[in-house]
Length: 129
Image (cartoon, rainbow, N blue to C red; front, side):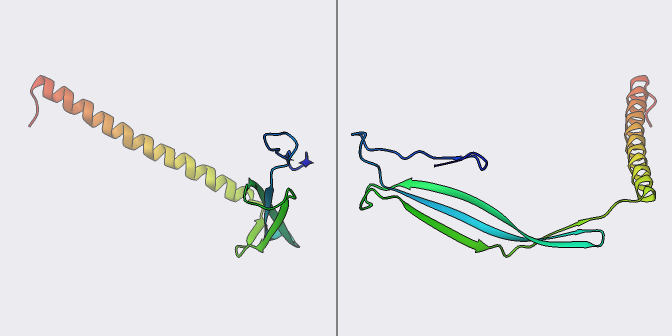
């Protein structure tokens, strides 16, 4: 079994004699997630399918025929994606906020370093109060 687009590759396993197929059970788990996309005036409602699979070999199974099981469910969580463009004014405000925050933190660090150096210098010349 091979699905190169999905990246799934599976080969049937054989017993030690090399002729008898090991009994196997493959479970496919699929979850449908409802999604809403909004772009401008257009609204889209789609379902995204998330899937995985698991293959187990059980020596207690009767017969060499493989068992294939599908588990399908709808997700209780809805994904809502809204695309909005940020205006130039909002962008400039964000940049100013970042620069102001960096300037404030740099001022605090400079003040702490200045007071520490001043304290060490005054203690070395004996001028502490």
